Image 1: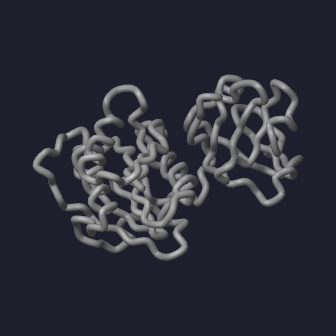
Image 2: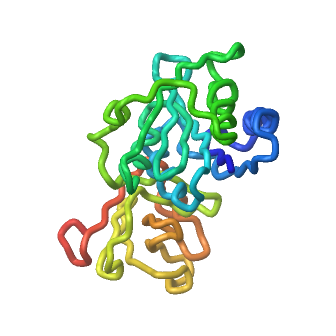
Length: 249
């Protein structure tokens, strides 16, 4: 299957144009719309989000992953093979956490191909989608395999102490993973100290809390409300986990 992960948004023609290319070049291959509202123009925050969801998909899945504020510049185009899944998109750190968490060493190809139609601002349609379609059909990436170290961002942390995504309910997802004994930890966000709750029902109506979400990340919610609105959170807002009763909390 081919999985779409972008910051394009659902309004406008962009996702439809990606799907059109994939349908023409890889007919019969299922296309999954995973996310169209990844952190906008933020490859770092998007990298932690992509890694959290990629592991759900089977081997040979091909991701068209595009969060690309440098489109049209000299940034490289990449195809990455990590844990038998392919990732096609810009070389800007978007695949760092996927590569870092891979069970076996990942590999990457610098894509040198330049199609006849290559706009300056829509490489998702003109370059990444065609390459992904070819890979989905079993064709090798059209480029040169390069040492994986060239792709890496070693200065990025294993976990990101920030909000990386806010859903339509106002739940705020972070780049942190829950500790093994979550009930012993408090979370600081938006100037508030939040206790852990396993489920929404464990928190009082209107109360803010943190929990480990279904994809293994720390998330902030309000039972029956919006954590983003109640705590004034946005993508990039800092969060901090600390043992209950510690000075920082």
